[in-house]
Amino acid sequence: MGHQTKAFPIKQLPSKEKRHQLFGSVKPAPRTKPVDKMHMADLQNTKKDFLFDLDAVGVTKVKNPIMIYSSIAPYTQTSIGEFTFTSSLKQTNKGTNMSRFMEQLANYQKNGFSTELDVLKKFTKEIAKRVEQQDAALEVNFPWFFERQAPDTGLTGLNHADAGIRIEYHELKGFCIYLSLSAAITTLCPCSKEISEYSAHNQRGNVIMEISVSEDYQEADLDWKKVLLEAAESNASARLHPILKRTDEKMVTEQAYENPRFVEDMVRLIAADLYETSFITKFKVTCQNEESIHMHDAIAAVTYDKTKEV
Ligand SMILES: Nc1nc2c(ncn2[C@@H]2O[C@H](COP(=O)(O)OP(=O)(O)OP(=O)(O)O)[C@@H](O)[C@H]2O)c(=O)[nH]1
Image (tube, rainbow, N blue to C red; front, side, top):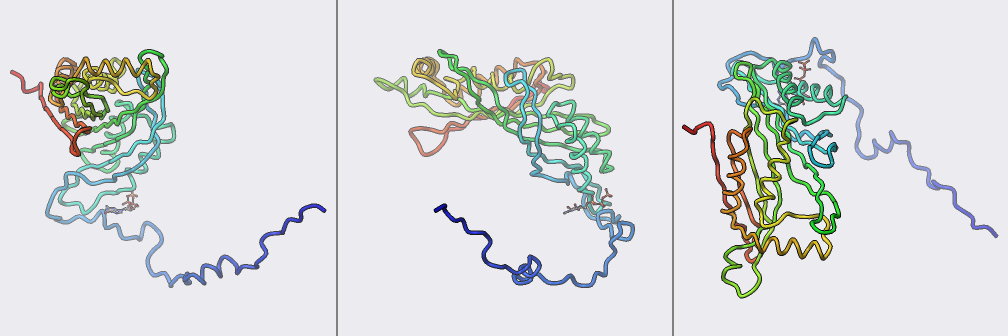
């Protein structure tokens, strides 16, 4: 005898409409307000003295797919960007037209929205025009992936750092560009190495580099993401790796022992590299170590403005 399957559904349920009513849906009340845009109230565009100019108004936490180009592998990748789009607002205007920021994003999205600085500059300038203001700002933060090779076996996998771009545009003043990268590194404590008969405690550090760039900076000549990543990693006790076999692990461990670093050492060494990078005009470097012998973290920071040099 073959196995008999039951035919589903067995129970006869009320219709979907009846089910919605059962759970509280009611018939629409009579509509009294206009439905055509021409006759709708436009509160945003009310003109009066609203007491203060606003520095920024717009939309934030906007997630959108992005294309990222890099000078290290993977050379092209897709990621998710979290955006903020704003402009200032005059004291005489009640509100901005928020939908226009999102309309602009939808237009760019059609061809794939890339984080190339030239694209984002164009976007920000167009936003100002679209919302009828003198200025606009765009901020985007995204995880950026890069290939990392194990030092001995050469096995590769992906690591990532958190990248950020802020573009400010003003009709009269032009553009300001701020870039940031937050990268993880290994540090081995110099003090612990010095005082102990053997070993030294180490930790995972997080380096945040925030920079301003010169007006003539072209990322096609030098990829800022790679520059900042190298500044953090090349000055650390060791780099982080997705894949390490024993022969790799030995090398990374010994390299860290040979290059002990305090958080203070980290920010000063990275500052030196950023100081020597000609397209960087100002920078802030912060290093925060998740201490392995404490519940708390260690932190150090340095800022420098090359434009203030005499
Ligand atoms: N100004 C403002 N708008 C808001 C606020 N909260 C929500 N909104 C948005 O107002 C939007 C309406 O956008 P608008 O761009 O003003 O719409 P519109 O006037 O039809 O657009 P235009 O034809 O471009 O002038 C809706 O999408 C709401 O999301 C707020 O606090 N301030």
